[in-house]
Length: 128
Image (cartoon, rainbow, N blue to C red; front, side):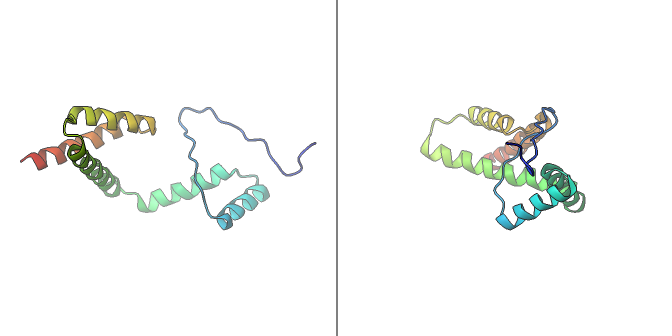
């Protein structure tokens, strides 16, 4: 049976893109779907445009830097919590595990390095 409305997904194998799955409210999904069908603009393109607009207006280098710092503090506090339960937890091993998880999440090497540097700063600050 031929579909009247359904379009074929064009799976892009572009190495500069990543799939992001997210649950969104039905109202928003309906709006995006209807607009996409009415304009032939893909849902991915719509979401990308909205996110680009948000980044242009909200995501400054200060916000990015604060995100690195905040995430690093969260990770370092996890390290401290794990040290209580696993006394033999090696700090280098912990950093390596974080690195592997961030790589798995698709973060770039420079971003990972920056996060690990901030975790190191937290570690040094708490050692003193």
